[in-house]
Image 1 (tube, one colour):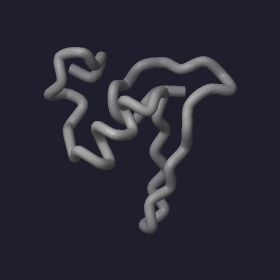
Image 2 (cartoon, helix red, strand yellow):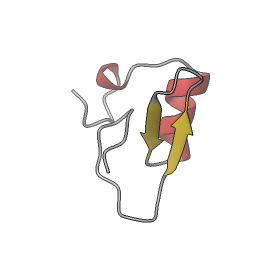
Image 3 (cartoon, one colour):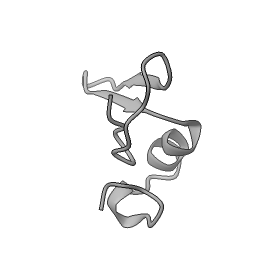
Image 4 (spheres, one colour):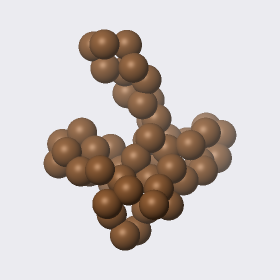
Length: 53
């Protein structure tokens, strides 16, 4: 499964799903990715440490 923020691969049985009120499903490989996208409002492709460039 690919992370919605960093586009990194995650092993089966790890990570977290987040479903928005609109029905869009987001998958996060770590709490770091989840916080950066949802709480801080950052974009993955603008961060140097992500694979989504």
